Amino acid sequence: MIFSAGCFSKNMMVRMADGTDKPIGEVRPGDFVKAYNCEHNKDNEELVNSEVRFSSAGLYQTEPKYEKYTFSNGTVIEIVNRDRLYNVEENKMKWTDEWAIGEHALTYDGQEVALVSHETIHEEIEFHVFANDYYNYYINGLLAGQKSARYPFFPSRGFGTSSITKN
Image 1 (cartoon, rainbow, N blue to C red):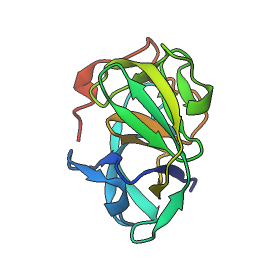
Image 2 (image 1 turned 135 degrees about the vertical axis):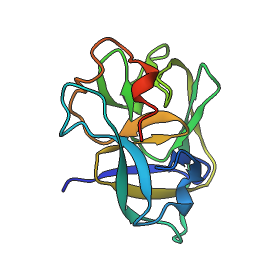
Image 3 (image 1 turned 120 degrees about the horizontal axis):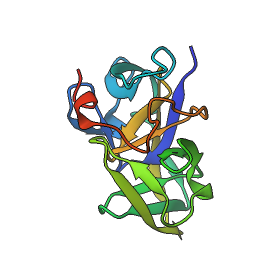
Image 4 (image 1 turned 90 degrees about the vertical axis):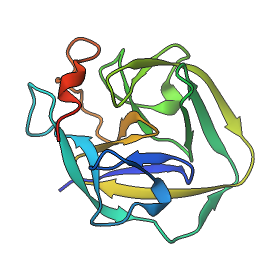
């Protein structure tokens, strides 16, 4: 099994299997998060419940700076070092430090939101990591993950919201 891990500030919220959002620092092994089954369902979107296999919950980790990404719907993502978000234009997960202003991320409800700013913040931040078994997850409502393969189930820059509400 290959895992997906995120390295986000403690303020970031993860979409859980029951549809609620939980601070990343409270996500624990055995919890389930919403993810896409992109390995087993190449032609259709399939929202699944993905088990968390590792979590840094309870550990105090800090870094002296972080990257702050702001999107057109007001969503803010705070990342320590680097991580990937789903990039609509390239139809794949893309390292955030390689994004250009104006490129689009994908929200939980299927909306495309543009990156409007990126800045490096030089202040200490607490961060947490977790890993799940479907390569991806939603962080502050945006699709994120470590799998670098393309996502064939998003063939036309977006998709119907009916598939997103599956349990």
